[in-house]
Amino acid sequence: MLIVKKLLSVVMAIALVLTVVTVGVSAAGTASGDEYMTITVSTNENYMPDDIVTVTVNIKNNYNCTAFRFPVMFDSSVYEFPAVIGLTALGNCKAKGTIGANTSNDGSFIPTTYNASAWGCILVQWTANVANNEVGALNDEGGQAVFSFNLKVKSDALAGTAGTIFVPEEYDGFYYQAIGDVTDATTFYYLNSETLTRTFVPANPIILGDPIELVAREGSTTVIDETNKYVYALESPMSSTQVFNNYLELKGTNATLQYEGTLYGYGTGAKINVMLGTNKVTSYEVVIFGDSNGDSYADAYDLVDAINFVNLLSIPSDIQTFALDIISASGSATSGDGVVDAYDLVKLVSVANLMSSLDQANPYQS
Image (tube, rainbow, N blue to C red; front, top):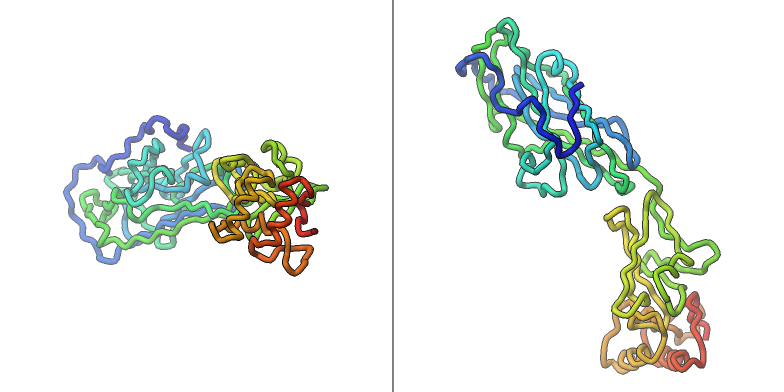
């Protein structure tokens, strides 16, 4: 097994050059006109975060291939190289030639059509050996595994993600040398991207994991509105982000909560982000009933906003409407009527003057 050192390691001792054999030859041989190669990337199963993934590459072809050179790319938000990458030649690839790889991963092997910061790759090259004037070419119309290597699923990989691993057809360093007669090391000829039909089949294993879910902490009355992505029935005021821990908890692999306040605090409009590492899975907005400016208090500032809304001097946002719609004209005890009107204003005057209070779990009780 050829051991390739850690990502950003020194290029392997076997140089990845385009010269295939050292036998002095001139192009002879003739292409048949129907040459093809199918390159299939596969993995054995789906994976959990931190699992090691064995990637296997299979080549099916109908001509005497004397070399191949291409990158195997992978989604770098899902995978990374483990401390040691086991690059292993398999089958006739092992018996008939020499394999090498480069994992410097500086983007130079990635086609310009891809964002190099979003993709990692391992550049693999195999060259046929020559012994007793016979070239160890690959020609297998049934297809066979030619090499494998390892990747590691990142600890913060999103559950349910299809972690694509593939050979890009746009890569222009693909090697096109073939030989007409493997027992005659003077019959080499060349193909190109137009005369060689290439087919690429990717692998898309699914990253498994516990479903990530924001839930109300046991014993709390907190409401998580998945339709509007609102969270309410919290405290008024919200003195710090630590208060959220009294009301909320996360279920799921390695998930964390991140909070983004408004200009004035952690009231209406503040963000609760569900994170996996640096990836935002989803986001919710805080609602404090009676609070429209985001400071988490229901006070004179919000009363001014409500007066402007009722008199059509300004237009509330959706979340401001939800937060200030605290009385239903129909007398409903479970919801507002969808507008900020005089009914809500009367109640808010009473709350702002400390004559009454709002139940954050059910403010519609008059």
